[in-house]
Length: 400
Image (cartoon, rainbow, N blue to C red; front, side, top):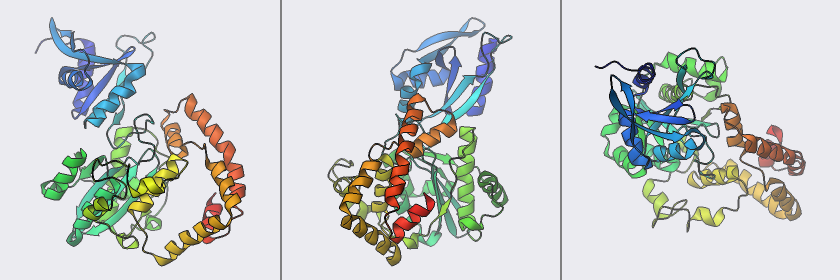
C-alpha cells in the first residue's frame, strides 16, 4: 500500500469506525467524501466525481457538497436509505498546529432526523426496536424530533399484532432481532416502506436498565411499568442506546417513557386500516381523500400529529371515550370560548421540534423567534382553558 497523506490517514481512521455510513468529512467550507462514499454520493446526488491525491502519486475518488447547503443533500441520501456520519473540524484551522483535529459529532439515519426542512410537519418520524425474549416481543419506538417514547410487550403467539403496530406507526428505521429478518411479513413491510433495518446490539437486561435509569435519572423503572416486562425493557434499552450512540449529545427533551397495552386500544389490522382509508388513500398512499383529511382542522403541527395518532389507535376504554366526548360537548356548547382558544392556538409553532433542536444545539435564529412568539401566546391560552371544567381539560390545566 502506497504512503498516505496525513489527511487521508485521518479520514480512513475515522471511516473505519463508521463503515455503514456515508462520511461527510469537513474540509473548510465543504463536506468531502472519498472512495466508495464519493461514488455513491455522485450517483445519488448527481454531483461531480473528481479525485484527490491520497499519497504516493495515486488518486482517490472524491465528491463534495457545500457546508452551508448540506441539509438538502443529506435529506436526499437519507431518503434513499443511507446513513450519514457528520465529521467536523474540532478546532480552528488557523490555530491548529499541523493537521486539524476532526471527529464524528453525529450520525444521521432515517429514524434520527431532527431538521425541520427534512421532516413532514404533521407526521412523526419513528425509530423502532424489536427484541425477542423468551415467549414475548418487546416493541418500542421513539421520535427524537418530538421527544415521544413508547414501549409495549407482545406475546410471540400474537406476532401478527406486531405487523399491525408497524403499519400503524410507519417507522422509518428499525433495530430488529435477526430471526425477524426471515419473516415474510417483516420483509414485505420493510421493502414496501423503504425501511432501514439495523442489527440489535444485544445488550443485557441489567445494561438496558442502567441505560434507562441513567437517562431518566430515576431510581426505579416501576413508574414506567417495566418491572415485569423484560422484553419491553430490553427493547427500550436498545432503542435509547442506539440514539445515544448515534447522536452523541444530551437528549434531555426525551423526558418521558409511556408503556401501553394493546388491549387499551382497538387493534386495526393492515388490510382494515388501508381499506378504510383512515390516513392514506388506496390509490396513491396520500392523505388526500382520507378520513384524516376530512377531520383535520388542526392549526398546529403538534395537533395534526396527535389527531393522526388518535385515528390510527381508536380507544376502547369507555371512561376515556366518554372523557373525550364530554370535552367535545363542552367546547361545542361554548362556541365563543372555542373560537377564542382556536385564535390562541393559531400561529403557535411546532414547540416539540423547536425544543428538540434547542437541546441538540442546532436551533437557529428563526427557531428562537418562533419559540418567543409561541410562548407569548400561552398565558392567554392557559387562561381560556382554565374556564373549561370537564375531566379531559382538568388534566390539561393541571399539567399546563
